[in-house]
Length: 161
Image (cartoon, rainbow, N blue to C red; front, side):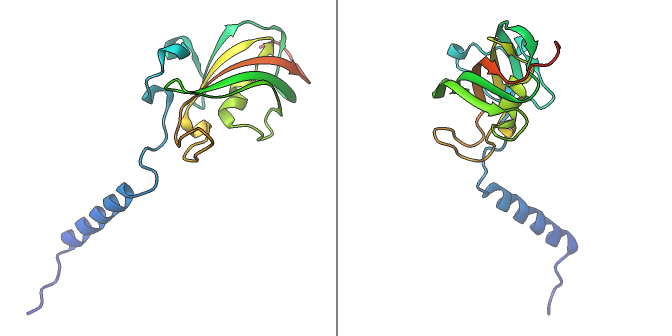
C-alpha cells in the first residue's frame, strides 16, 4: 500500500531546504551597519556625536574649513582609512576624484560632499555603502570603514549649506 505524503510535510521540507541552503551560502556575515560593530577606541568614533546621512553613512566635522561647500566636480583629498576594529588599511596624501561619477565608494562620495576647503571630517561607512560582500586588498567582506578626510582642493565650490 502506498501512502501520500501530507501537504504540511512537503511544505516543511521546502522551508527546511531553504534554511539549509541559506545557511550554506558564501555570505555568512551579511551587511553591517555602523551600529553593528564596536569601534576601536583609538579611532575616536562616537556615533552619538555624528550626523547620520540617509544612506547610513555617518559624518562629523573635526576641523572647520573655509569658504563655500563642495557639491560637485573634481576634488582632491588627503585621507586615512581604517577598519572599524582599528587596523589602518590605506593612507593618501593626495587623492583626486570626481564627485558623483562612481569613481569612489558611495559612502566616501557622500561623506566628502558639502565639505569646505581645509575641512577635516570623520566618515563612518556601513558595508553596503562601502565594498559590501566584495573582499578588497586588506578589507574583509562587509567591513564598516572609518575615514579621516581633509579636503585640500576643489574644482567647483557652490553656495554655503
